[in-house]
Amino acid sequence: YYRRSWSSESSDSVISSESGSSCYRVVLIGEHGVGKSSLANIFAGVHDSIDSDCEVLGEDTYERTLMVDGESATVVLLDMWDNKREGEWIRDHCMQVGDAYLIVYSITDRASFEKASELRIQLRRARQKEDIPIILVGNKSDLVRCREVSVAEGRACAVVFDCKFIETSAAVQHNVKELFEGIVRQVRLRRDSKEK
Ligand code: GDP
Ligand code: MG
Image (cartoon, rainbow, N blue to C red):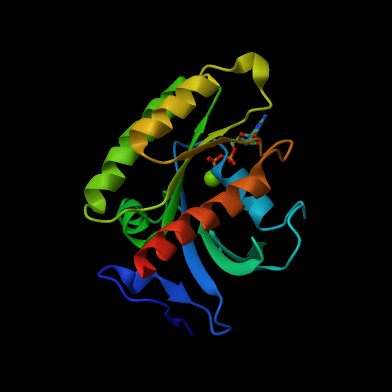
């Protein structure tokens, strides 16, 4: 069903759909309650803000083709980080299978922000030699009066992480489309620099 689209040491996870458009596996990670599933639901089109069809591949897996900068990309989004039923192995699995990661915290929860740093370190350890595209996501930006983490702190953290940063609100659907387009662009940037 899937075939490799380009070769590199770690390209088992880099897959391409039969139509020839690129396919990327994007994994949501972050503390419970920060809004990962809410972001996934928007992606899945539950609220229908991103046009084009979504296919639900499994309970926690969503696939949809996005048009980004005039080129289509199929994103398979995995939201299984909090799946306790499956046990701890699922987190190891998540750390291994992503082509790109969205590390999500809530701007209203400093502990979740600190957890994000831990996850960045874990990811670096799990995928040592790879330059993996990551976006640090400060969600719940609509809750201005409960803010515990400033925009400046989020941005500074992303510099340390060597990744992109965005604040989103799943509740009012602010920057969510931009988030998913952004991760496609990050994957492409690395792909294009590899091809040269
Ligand atoms: P998960 O555990 O990371 O998957 O988080 P959920 O998506 O289940 O969200 C946890 C709670 O936060 C739910 O009650 C959501 O309705 C709420 N929530 C998620 N995103 C936002 C947001 O952007 N703003 C606000 N105000 N609430 C949010
Ligand atoms: Mg969830």
